[in-house]
Length: 137
Image: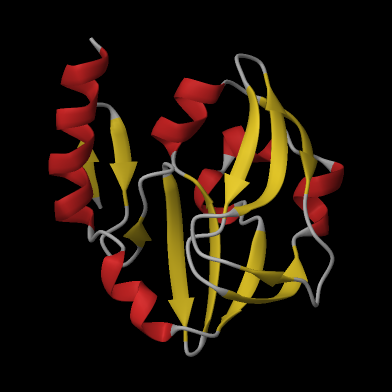
């Protein structure tokens, strides 16, 4: 676990510029919001996700969420086909704030595995996030 300011970031995960974590298992990934992503959006109140079987494209919208501070889109960290939706967090989105690394949005089967190389490691996200926080200050 790497601590960035007051947030914990597991070393085994990948990260994107939408404040999402990505866990890869074989040719599939699951993803959700990082604790920092939750801090800037607020507690998630509502979540809308696509049905299993939906094709998604990297960096395109693949869902939406409403939170205490923000209403916005969820972006696909990779291209592929949605194989599962986490129905538990759709019905109880408050769980995302309590256990962000267990509260994945969906599972995607990769169609372009090389896109994983564009995601950040924990050490890369640490530098990127600290720089982003300076710009936002």
